[in-house]
Length: 419
Ligand SMILES: *Cc1c(COP(=O)(O)O)cnc(C)c1O
Image (tube, rainbow, N blue to C red; front, top):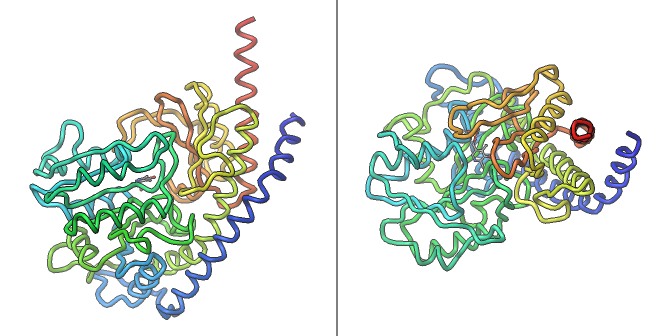
C-alpha cells in the first residue's frame, strides 16, 4: 500500500496553495467572531445559565447579540430548544407563511427532510401545502447557478418566501456562493417588496468571509451540530435576520405573546459560546480535509464535486463512486476511522424525514454531529457519497486513506470473482 501513501504525500503538496486561501478566510472570520464577543460583552457569569422559563437570561442575550453581529443580522435566536436544522427551517416557514401565500424554491427540490415539511408528496394536513400554502419550484441552471430571468418572471403578489439552500444537499451539484445569494436578494427586493429571502445556511457558516444576511438575505437558519457549533454545542439550532421575521419565527417556536422571551439555557451557554468561538477554525480544518479528499479521489479516477481548487460554498465533498457496494465500503471505512463506535458496521436504513434508504457513518461524540468527520449517502443513482467535517485535517486524511484502501480491496475481490 506504499503507493497510496506516496500519492497522498503528492496530494498534500498540491493542495498547499488552496490551504493558504482557507487560512486567510479563517483569519477574517476569527476577527469577526472576536469583535462580536467584545461588542456583546461576554462575561464569565454568562455561563451559569437559567432553568424553568429562562426569563432574563443574560448569557443567552449575549450569545444572541454576538451571533447577530457575526451573521450580519438585526437579531438572532440561538436555542437548544431548536432540535435541528430542519426544526429551525420549519419554524421559519410556519412563522412566515399563511394560507394563500406562495413559497418559491429556486434550486429544484429542496433538502430531503424539507419535503415532508412543505408537503411535496401525500401532504399531511400539518404541512405547508396541507394548510393552503402554494408551492412553486424553479430548476437551477446546468452549472448549478440560479436562473435569474426565470426567478424574475416567477415573482408575483403572492410570493411570500423565496427559499435558497447554500449547501449542495445530497446532490452532485455545487454549493451557492455568497455573491450569488446577493444577486438573488437584490433582484427579489427590487421586484417584490413583500417577499422574504430565506436561506438554509446549513454547512455554509464560516466558509466565506460574509454570511447571507450581510449580503441582503432577510433570514437564515442552521444547525448547531454543524459548522457554527464548533464541535462543542451538544444540540440546538439558530435563526437570524431581520427583527420582525426573527420575532415571527420565535412566536412559532414558543407561542404568540412569549416569543424569544422564554427559553432556558440549562447550563449549556458556555459550550455554545466556546463552540462559536472555535467554529471558524474547525470549519477551516474541515475545508482542508475536503480539499485533500477531493484531489486524492480525483487522482484515483473518481469524479468529485467540487474540484479541489474550485471556490467552495459549504464543507461538503461529494465523491461519485458509481455502485452501492463502493458506497457501503466507503462509509464503513469512515466509521472504522472514527473515535467513537468504530466497531459499528453502518447499514442503510430508514431515517425520519428521508424517503430513500440512507447509509450514515458517524462515529461522533455528539450524535449525528457532522462538523465531526462523517459520510452519508442516499442509496440511489449516481451512488455518490457526501463526506464532511473532521475536527482536524489529519483525522480526515486518516479516514480518506482507510476509505481508499477499502475501495481497492473491494475491486480486488470483484476482479477475483470474475476470473
Ligand atoms: C443538514 C441539513 C439540513 C437540516 O438537517 P438537520 O439534520 O435537521 O439539522 C437542511 N439542509 C441542508 C442543506 C442540510 O445539510
